[in-house]
Structures are given as structure tokens and as C-alpha cells.
Image (cartoon, rainbow over all chains, first blue to last red; front, side, top):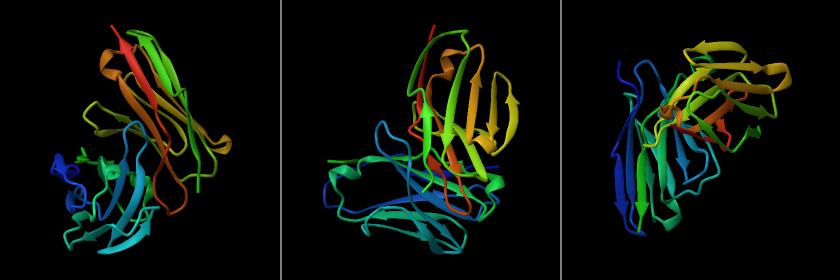
Length: 114
Length: 108
């Protein structure tokens, strides 16, 4: 049973560019959440998708956008990259409004903006 | 939003020692998870424990929901236990909120 898979594992982009990160949820999960983890910090919630709609959003600018597909997979897009966007981006899958199932995290995408 | 505080922030142990990590939270929760983040960044789920006590090998966890804290016990620590331990909670139908983590270093 595959867990959460993320791609790519590492990425280097130039300031001002755009980036797309991808996530496939664990089998049986229908909800995808994205987190940003800066060096030395805990993960910070970006947004959550269910039924192809953004359901919740953290304190992140509109440069961060996402999408969920009918097969529950998801993309995170970041436009006009800043040096401060360099971080580990984690995807978590879960079952919508079923906290007793918990969250499962992928291995993350490490984004470096130069 | 809900606040999560973890202590201690850093911990250095000799192999074989025992340790206790603490997580305090500011509101009632319906989900509490302990994670271990390995050096490659992956968050490994250790326990889903909104209340009660669970054990898995050398690790065990206890959450006292009425007093809003959780404890993670590591017994007979090994070098492979090194890494960052996170407590994360969910209140209502929100999302996971993480503490700042406890960085554990186990030396041989």
C-alpha cells in the first residue's frame, strides 16, 4: 500500500520564477494538505484541498496556489519566487473531517531559490 | 488558533538512556500525533494519541486530554533515535498545528 508520494525530491529555482510541486495521497485518503517547513522550524500550514476545492488556508500570500485532481492528487504552485520561499514543502493526506484516521506525510520537496 | 508548546527544545543523551518529551496544548483536541523527522526530512508518524496511552516497542506515549498535555517516552535510546520530534494537534475540523519540536541527539 503506497504511502504519500511527492515529486520532485529536490529543486533549484531562480528568484522570480514559478514552481509546481506534486503530491499523490495515500490510498483511501481524499484530502491533501500542504505545509512549508523552514530550516529549524516546525511545519506551517499552507492550504488544504478536498473535492477539488480549497477548504482551508493558512497565512500565505496569493503567490501560493494549488489544485486537486479527480484522483485526489494535488499540485502546489508558487509564483514570483522569493529567496524566503526556500524550504521543505511537505504534503499530507488524510480523510476529510475524520481526525481519528490521522495524517500521513510524504518525504517532501526541498526547494532552493537562488 | 491553538497553541502547541514542546519541551525541552534540545536534548542530548548517551545511548541506552531514557527520556521524556512533553507537549502542552491550549485547547481541547480531537487529534494529537507524535512524529519523528529523520535527517532526510520525512515525518514518520509515531503515535496517533488524542487520549490515553499507547506503546510501540521502546516508545510509548500518554495524552491527558483534560489537562492538555502529552508525553512521549523513549527508553533505551539508540543513535537511530536522533532527529527532531514533533507534536501536532488538531482542534475541531481544522488542520494540524505543530509545535517547534524537540531536537534529540543520541551519542554512542
